[in-house]
Image (cartoon, rainbow, N blue to C red; front, side, top):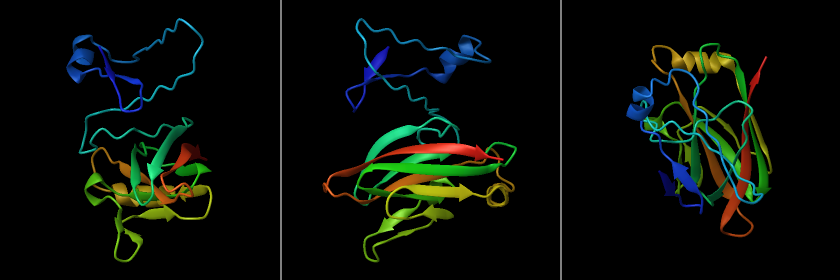
Length: 178
């Protein structure tokens, strides 16, 4: 069944047990039907696993659109895979300003320190005015994944400035580099 979500859209939650009972071992197909022409986005999130708390997964080539309040984070999960290629994260700012911070685990998320006015606890960042372009070297990813089963990283888009005082809007794109 469809569940209304916070952004006037709908969410469809497929419990893991339903997927296993249906013997889904490869692809799951989803179709969208409309009576009139419309535009829509589909966001797929895996809501299980090692303490990832249901954050949306970054998928190479799939752009994520969102907004974030000033001095707040919007979190995504990044799984580097077994090939450990260089990974490029590109944030295109549509309004306001954002920065990208990468944390090594859910338990060590970057946080904004209100006393110092700085962000603490991260392994990589891109904090420029305007858009962000962060290249994560495969050697860094590999060194942080040693002895970690199901290695993942948390990518935080931080609202660093909003000229409206409300929020910054952005798109985030992950691409694998050769």
